[in-house]
Image (cartoon, rainbow, N blue to C red; front, side, top):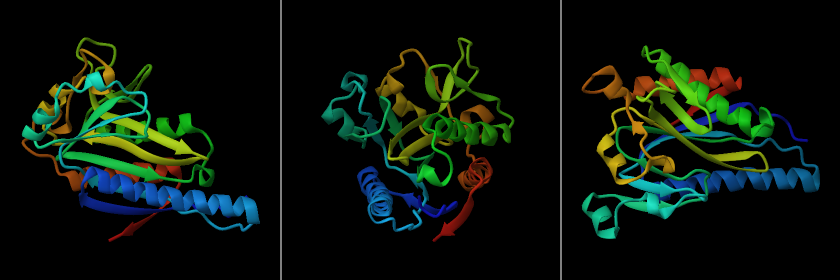
Length: 238
């Protein structure tokens, strides 16, 4: 066992390249795993750290471990023409898009500081999004058998507003969620999002009929719900 640490270091990375951010996640992830291994081998009782990264990526498509490359509808030349990049990565899930106007959150947590239940972890991340959207007057839901957060579930108008894909090893998490706030939804036309045909995507901006939604305000709401749901202390880092 190790001393429990419910403090989460929160960092807003601003706009950052996908690969650079992924490398940074891997660094933090490895640091936590190394501490856990040391605790187990040496009975060191060291605290493990927890992190929550906000980031906005330039246009990029990422394909999860179980994903099918045919769900990307562009070749290399077309990707370049659209100013987008592509990466095959080590999270669950199929293909997704990240880009400007999207709030991406990467919690890198040692779940042993909170609870050891990946299913619960995913449900709480979804709940954080659902509660945040409710503050904007939107009724969002989970969709049976499909991760992420949706509007008008179970109707022909079902549309996804937030994608989710995580990786966990020894109860340490990485990757996370992508909430469409002011995103250019046209970029989703170049993929079969999450491998699901015929499902629409939407954004907070579209749903509210606004020209722009304050992303900092959305982040504040997300963090407030995250803190409550995980019964955590948040420490903002510059």
